[in-house]
Length: 430
Image (tube, rainbow, N blue to C red):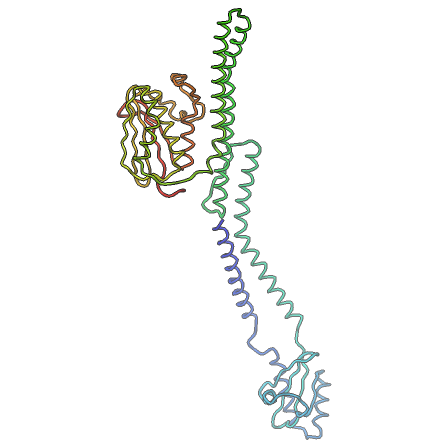
C-alpha cells in the first residue's frame, strides 16, 4: 500500500504542477501585450490636440461637442480638483495618461502643457463578463485536467480492486481454489499476496478439518466395535473371570479412544500456537544433546544406537516447538529403526539444516509427498507403534512452516532407511 500512497501523492502533485504550467502558458498566449485601453488612449490624445487648438474659453464647449458627436463620456475639468497624490498627478502628463477605477468602472485622465491646468477625463468600458467567462473556462479546464490525471492513477486501482472482489466472491461461494494472479503493475500487491495467503491458509484448515473428521470417524470404529463386542460378551457370559477379562479389554479400548481423541484435539488446536512463537538463541550441540537425553529410555528399550553429528552452530528459533519437531522425527526413527539412527545438524548460508536418518524399511517413494499429511500412515507401518495416529510428522511440517522453512524425506544414503531433512532460516526472526 505504501507504493500506492506514494504514487497517488506524486501523481496529484505532478498533475497540479503540469496543469498549472499549461494554463499559465495558455493565459500568456491569449493575453495581448498591447494595453487593454491603448485605443482609447490614442483617441483621447487626439482629442487633446483638437481641444488644445481651441481658445481657452471655448475648450469646454468643444469637449462637450466631441463627446456628443462620438457618444463618449468625455469631459474637460480642472486638474486641481483631483484628490490624487503627486506621483499619480505626474502620470497624467505621461503618454497614454492615467487609468483609474471607481464604483462606475474605469476612466482615463490625460493632460499636457497645452491643456494645463486642465485635463481631459474619458469614461471607459471594460468587458467584465468576457474576463469572468475566461476565468471560469480556465478553472473548469484545470479541474477537468486534474480529474483526467487522477483517472489514470485510480483506474488501474479500481481494476485490481475488482479482481480482488471477484476472487473474494468466488472463494465465498465455495471455490476454495480461487486466487489472484498478482501483476507487477499494481498498487496493492501486498493486499493481493495477503489475500492469496489467507485463502491458502483457510483452504488448508478446511481440508485438515475434513480429513480429521473422516479419519476420526474411521479410526474410532474399531475400538467402538471392540467395546460393543466386549459388552455383549460380558453380559452373556456366566463366568465371572471371563467377565473381568472382557472388562479389562474394554478399559484398554476406552484408554485407546481417550488417547486418540486427545491426539486429534491437540492437533486441531495446534494452529492457534502459530502466533505465539518465542524466538531465542542457543548452541546446537547442547540443545540437541538435551533432546537426545529425553529419548534415552526409548533408545535403551529398543537397543538403538543414536549418533549425533553437530558443528555447534547457533540456532535462532522457537526452541520449544523446534524441539517438539526434532523429537517427533527421532521418535519416528526409533519406531522403525533396526539398529542405528544418525542425527546431523549444521548451518549453511544462514540456514539451519537438520537430518534424521535410520536403518529401517524407509518410506516408499510414492508416499514421500503424503507422509507429512495429517493422519497418513503407510499400510505396512500401521500399528507398528502404540498410539500412533499419523500426526507426528504432520506436527513437524506445521512447526517448520511456522519457521518459514521446509521439510523433505528421501532414502538415506548411509543407512538405506528413511532420511528426513529439516531446513529453517537461522537468521533473525521473520
